[in-house]
Length: 81
Image (cartoon, rainbow, N blue to C red; front, top):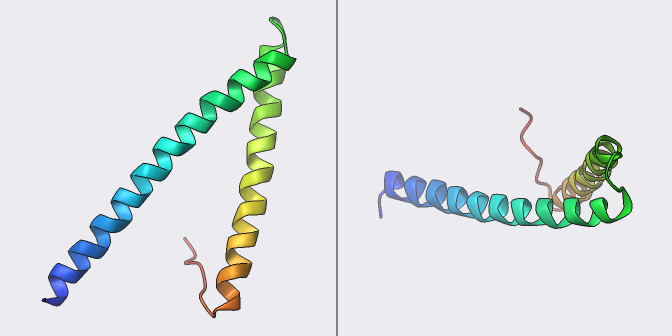
């Protein structure tokens, strides 16, 4: 198989995997928002959104650090963008 075809397959695999990740993230987004509205009643919606954003940000940072450490263990570095 040619190098071009392999690169296309690799790119398509990455795009499809990313799409599934986005779908899962959107599903979790709705579930977490529904959970937070249980704790913050009407009138406190803005507070609930900030709490939600803070929680998601903290989880994203922790996940990124853990993934980077795991990859570094195998000598792989995340690309800097």
